[in-house]
Length: 323
Image (cartoon, rainbow, N blue to C red; front, side):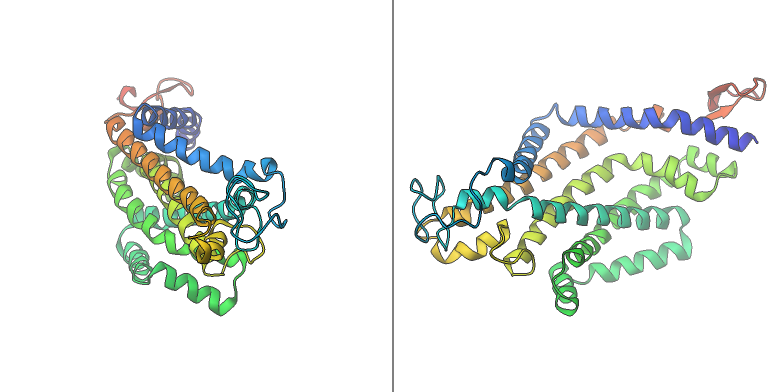
């Protein structure tokens, strides 16, 4: 009964503390120039990708002029592509599909990698060896080779692109989160909760994972940038959105032969992809620095609570529980 009361009290008090810690880390990251510039670049590219189809005006498949027509004519501010379509319209319509696929792959990678890394660190022994040796095998296979093998055997399907890209990113997440979770699993408050008889899955969910907030946020941002570049590379190779669909990777492949006549067909999507990669990396670096500077012993979000032996359900900090 005491263990159940402890668990219930901890569930009530940990939620707000975790949210407050997340807010503190983000706010501290945004005080630095890295955080501001990184978040600004990321939000700009995301806005272009998702608001572009609404603000794009003309359709990305409409023929407007001659192939590789210079900017300023009927094709618009960025000129024409290989078939005379507006480069600006195709840029504005070509990012949302790529972003959604990369985001789904990143979520899959973070969930699978976090689960594998945290379970390996907390359980240790044979479970740790089995999980991490499997991770080492996946790390030994080049990402692009693995994805191309999957797509060539089964076919270039959207769900398969998500799964294959996510599986190539998960091992890196698992290694980083395992290293961080090993330290957390050895802390006194985690051992105390386990000694009360709380199930391992509850200890991991309520006490270990919330303490990994900073490395988890950093890895999520890094994996998103890598996933976007990988998905765009697959589209460049013809394994993503098929022509005549608008896609930034497809645009680079279609217009590279006419880069001397109108370079914007290649430069515009390349600049957006580069800005997104730089922005997410800068913001993740700011988050990592903020997480390191805010880490301290006795963080309120990690405080343990117990039910007082003298009070009827009174919740007090663990260090104040009477002998």
